[in-house]
Length: 81
Image (cartoon, rainbow, N blue to C red; front, side, top):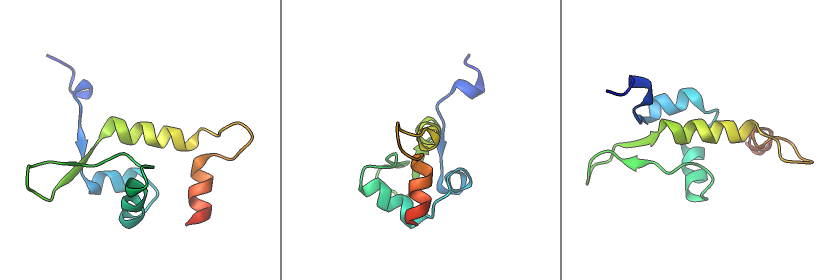
């Protein structure tokens, strides 16, 4: 049996909002622009959405990595808010 920490995990908005520094509406704007991980419906035909924990982790790590000759993405996001 796999270790519980190795099992892929879906996070609901309440958990995601504790990790990311953005509002729900801003996250959905970023999703529509293809700049934030896509949420997945938890039940076919339902409204509940979840995000893979690994996608959120990768996104947050990418925010703190500055590109050559520029600020980190997180600084850019927070300046535009």
